[in-house]
Length: 326
Image (cartoon, rainbow, N blue to C red; front, side, top):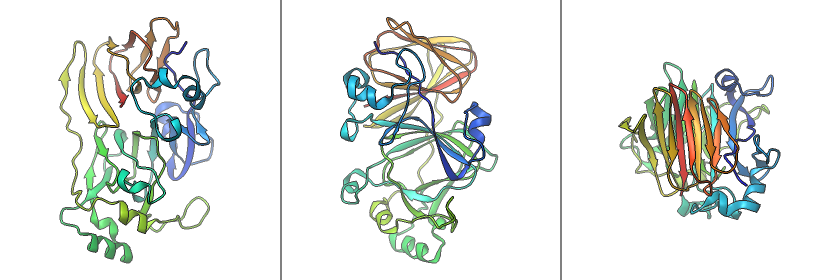
């Protein structure tokens, strides 16, 4: 019998990381390391999320996909090699990330990579925080290549000031970088291919310059992608909450729900869903399993498509993301 699952985070140290995941979400991150990523739901080779709740605690997402894929996925499509289709993370950027791009689907195979479409939800932001996303209007490939050579390619990127609650969609092929002072919830294709264009001339944790992938980047970048905008903050009213559509894509859809008062919502239909709590408190239960899952900010919960009558109850001032895999 399946039920709503939460998993043990997988922490990744990064040269640009910090300790905000501990402060904001009480994550038990390793002492003395700059933690840049917490992989909350992962079915990557060598990084399969371990179940933290209920009767199946200790088994992992790879086991679930090998033994219960149809129940987990419903009509959603698996990733390559029958893996879970999405990868969910929380990122803590105390410094800027590299200027980078992920290969589009029509180029990934020839570049020996995987396509990666993703979205960023800004959970916490320093007052002057910004994203680098897309190209400034009018930048040409020739100009871009020249500025790679002279170390000024950052001048080609469109820079956007952001605050908590802002959302950016990043299809494969869109050049981007996260600026310093940001904590981000990231929902993405199950992929880990990143091509670095420029890394601010810094060295990695091993003291060596980090590898760049200029040829692969140039083959991947959409040079007609000028000055993309943040997702509009257009909320609509539900029965006892407000909501907005953040992403509507062939790979996955994401909504944000906000409850000002304590309330509840039944999740209609049987779909593979992921709930990510951004603030407040909530519980998830479904008929039959007897497992009630408590969620706090920073928790991600996988709801198998086979579950019926799933109810989510919230405290006042609660908000969460609902992702449906397609």
